[in-house]
Length: 334
Image (cartoon, rainbow, N blue to C red):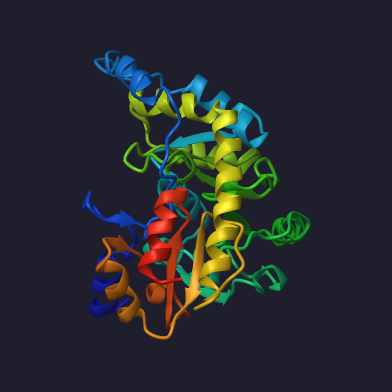
């Protein structure tokens, strides 16, 4: 890798989110609400943070396993979903390996592959499940896909996972947004690493809690590579609490479903809006800068989606609360 390419790689990847409390942030896809009781759980756990956490994380593993329907021993706790992705890529990819990567999708996949000395081979996100995984050390898909929003049909994803396993290709499935749907997880499927994050569904990006799921020898590799004490005591306690809040998840799914449909209907009067199963919508717009200026004047931020491979005139907007969504619609005059 030449010095210019390495500099670009080390510069990282652009992500959404704004820190200004006066701005209604539609650029990041996190739940604007968190489960009740989080502050109390965090405070109680902080009192126990004078000692190292139990590195077995039994409560966290049990809660995660119940959430996705797998065995607790298949759960590998990580400080966020990206850490699970990095762990999976590092376990699967060696220098010179090829990795099949859907595009447009989360840019960190390709970056992590390159950090391991591998080379991403891009396939269109809506065609990647038809690709031949043979000859690739790793295949990566995101469901629902970020930024396009659609979830893969479970039966097609399982069939692709079987083909990957038969070819000796590890399949990494990023399920960061799957909890917003009622679709089943691929957790526990042979040859698959599932990456999950508490950032999106539970509205706690600063907590840095997530996990990977893998079975058999692949799971052993991840467990061996995982840093000791990967989660702080408060993060583990809050994470376990959140993953047990089934009523919160059900209410979130219903709100996102209804508000996404409402937003799409209104925004379609002015823009091309992609179908979505996720808590966000991708819009094709005539002029990205003009749209950004328009919403900025109303104290709203949207995501410039041109940073995603293959998108040249698009923005992405999160699905937030009804009142906040009204503010976006007013800002865009739709």
